[in-house]
Structure formats: structure tokens, C-alpha cells
Image (cartoon, rainbow, N blue to C red):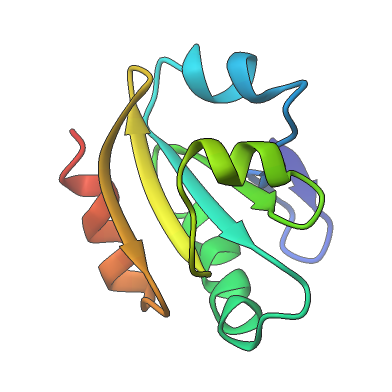
Length: 115
């Protein structure tokens, strides 16, 4: 958690995932994990990114982003062919996924179904 100086409240920080921290942050997580596979050149990814940031402050789950240009091995291991791809993992297993733009309520619903 980090302190939002403008609002004076604690907020959840989005975690940037690499192959080095993937096991610790995702596979060993005791809470659901939302993975956002994205790339800086992807228009729909830039539209989803602020929504994913908002969701991180509104749900009891870990929210993570994976830049597919920098983490090609992780993207490949999940067979990510199109972006943005969102996946929800629980106990190291994929429980939901979607490809393309999703609104905040749709993303929150993905996480709610993982419980």
C-alpha cells in the first residue's frame, strides 16, 4: 500500500511483474490476482490501464501488469496472442480471462467470480 498524498488515504499499488517476481507475487499469492498483459504501443491497452489502476483501489485482490515487450517469456507461457489480455488467477490457476477492452465493472466481475 502507498499513501495517496492528494487524498490522504492508503491505496493499493499495481505490481509490475517480471519473471523474477512472478512466482512470489502471483503463484504464491493467497488472494486473487488480476494480470494485465499489455504493451506501450497498444491503444486499447492504454485505455484499459487507468481502469485497472482504479480497480486496484476498489477490490480485495492483487493487481499486476505484465509488459509483454519486456516479459516475452511470461506472455508466451500464458499463450497471450492479443492484448490487452486480462487473467484472474487464484491459487496458481487461471480462473477467468478476457481479451480486448473491458470496462471497470466487467473487470471487477471477473475478480468477484474468482471467490
